[in-house]
Image (tube, rainbow, N blue to C red; front, side, top):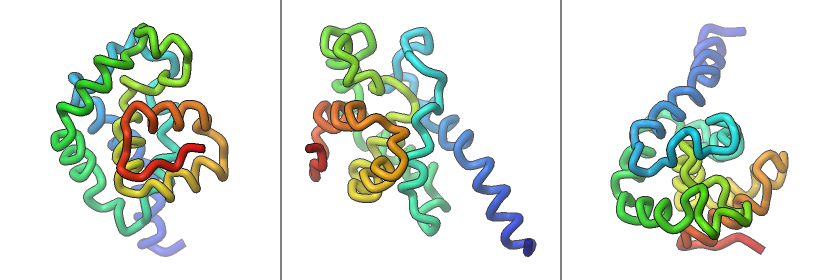
Length: 145
């Protein structure tokens, strides 16, 4: 393996925790940790696979800019669908308030077809959860069935 390949592998391994840590810097967009159903990062693989290699550099900065740009919308989303709310009791909104949700929403706006393609390949991110998040967020391009 070349030095360049080693660098790419090392970057790929450090990338998810760095993205998750960046998402955690926006507590106003997140539910309290006690209100989250799964360990943080559980649903991070799918949206991160939807980030093309050339997009990875600067990805955290773009996530931060996305969150700041959509602050009012994210706050409203959390108010309406927070864990424990009546809509959330149905389960389809269980991702709202989780740190990886910020990454999913950024991908939903930036690369909706890439996100769906990755979700379809692995089925790691339940279609019900992704459809519920898409409904609640209202992206410019809807791909739910």
